[in-house]
Length: 214
Image (tube, rainbow, N blue to C red; front, side, top):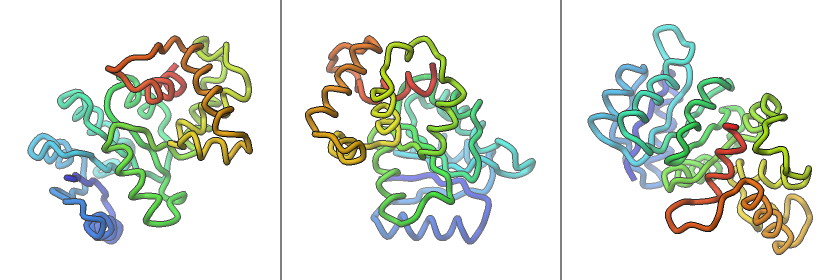
């Protein structure tokens, strides 16, 4: 699996490279600024881009903005944002097109290599990997959105866990319910969000995107 990495801190960048390579990822480019990130993505067309939010020269949102530009030029490009900050506006924009894998992890919340590697693989496969703190902030800022008004409190809990990337088994364990009950909640969510069965779309991802972008 081919990865483009954007991280301005040298030691952290090298550490991520070594971690990815230890799990047999191929880091085709590792850059420290948004301009080089866009160029590397255009050149290598990676399976996934791992991107810090704040890059030189202003250390504000260069990484996310470069990722957005790259995604417009390469629709569906899987992007995993790795940051110390939640940039709500750009995070919502990144999620808005509803195509390709998306992840947003806070650096302080990544506690072991398996957690990080699982997130990279999940995003590269077209899924989601959202840090609970990111989900909470996006959820709070959009708590009254109409598309979600029909969901019960429990269904919102289930959808929040889906946004974190939890499987049905993990959701059942977290909520102390049976897998059958978790599956029923998820089915109800699909129905209420008007996501009928389709072989052409991943309803789970679409439900999460609807939740975070509504």
